[in-house]
Length: 75
Image (cartoon, rainbow, N blue to C red; front, side, top):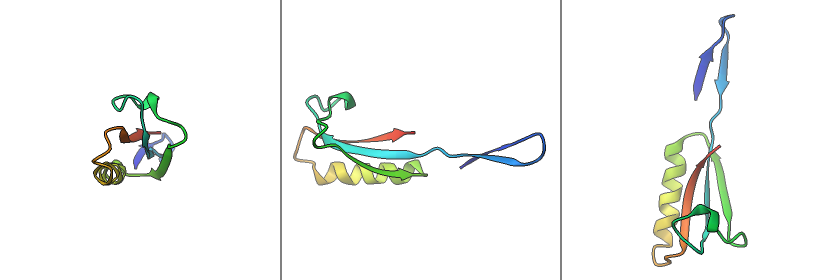
């Protein structure tokens, strides 16, 4: 988590979250071509490493299907 120190010595916390989106694609190299019927969203995750770990496991689980992808999205 990122913190910014304000002029009055208080801290502002900036929440960056990550989500994992998986599904089948018409073109597996572009996220925009996902089939909305198969789209699943996992998260949010506060750590990018956690999201990447889940995405990697989903990809490995569906390794035999060329049109299945999992993407890490920053929000």
